[in-house]
Length: 589
Image 1 (cartoon, rainbow, N blue to C red):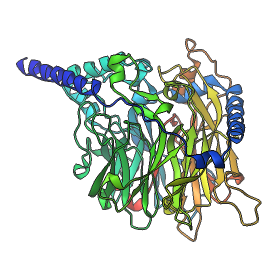
Image 2: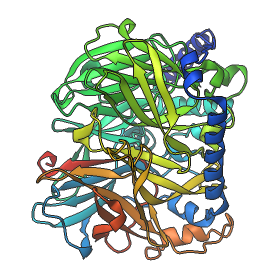
Image 3: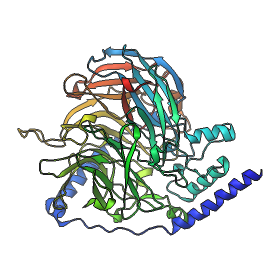
Image 4: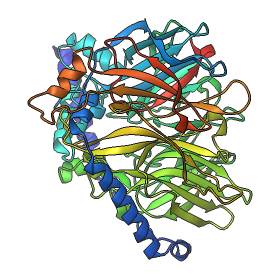
């Protein structure tokens, strides 16, 4: 009893100290004025035309929304750690596609009072063996938070989610306090590790940017287990209050020297951004602190031959909002300005970063970056324009493919434009061997249906159906027939089928070329748009109405449809999630 009282008192003292730090942290806004060069290159009338086209594309998706079907895809599923055999439903496994594991991670198990993103990380593994045996399993990442739930409360209590509080801040603070008192820890933010997967050497990490990663291993028999939670990666992930430390959800691996780079952020102390450089097996080579005017959420990064690309867009993080205005700590704050930073890969200090002011917006995902023949950095990414401060988390804000051309020699933005304002897209992807190089295509998913309300979670209040795979040209053809942003390939799923994974690009083992893999789930049509009736839950839990297939598309032209379709075992399906990783056979245990 005395031990418990001591822990609780220590926790409360730490929270009070943290309050004093946060309410006195930097809250100034960074005012950025677009350089005259941008205004000269892109007139106001052109910007207005592009914005109107984007709004038409968004409205078209909202007009056809099927809310009952969307909610069925968000329903939690049961863990299925035992690998069961899959079967090839059509076509045959390509002989030049490397065998390995298609992994899809995402949140699962969250409660109706929380946010979807509060759910624990679950990994779906579709393993294609060297004997062409195919299995499926679905396994939770055994994080520190899940262990504490078992050890402290025998699973009678779960961590309180924090994202269901949005757009309010005080309920989020209350959830953090409850977690600390219930589980006797200062790591009051659960390490759900539900966002992305990354591999360096033979080590695979499950990631979320608000906590340290967990290391997992995938077996050749199709099973999966957790090796370590709260991985510190040789000191890269520094312990911190509330979340235990932070590590970027996305990184990039240089295809030439295999250096792995991640960009992480914090809101409690300068410098607010950290760039970590890793050798094989997550061996930390160096960390470089890069300061930005205000703490911001940086979900992704990009990589070229000579630079790490940092996207300082104004999703600002101000924890003092929780205390001072009962607001969510992360908000879209366009007056903070937007910048793109180029950190030389040889840099030893953040002061070597080159900064470029750009138009405001939100860029969660980069597609790729490279250096052109003039030494300019070309960045491709998906940019959205939220309507309000909290709309990025409450509503679904569609994104569009954009290009930025940055000139390190002059320090100017040579060009900034939307490449295709007619197609709403999510989850961009290129071949791993073309990271940092001038790839011919970018693959993505089309946001074909947008709307709400969400039935299963408090946030987000709206969501999306992703029913098509898109293949963009990102080079102008020599004959002028194809320009950057042109849709050169499109695979529309059969009626009733919906993408539940991002496009995952796998390089062929013979010659050049790639395959595009996407997990798809069937939902019966005409599900009642009624929370109380609960038909969306019935079809998601009856073990027969919903089913999943893995579609393998020829990367050169996805329009021809799948060359191979793999059926998951009966009674199993994949629900909505986030990011993927294709792990080669020799990386499996």
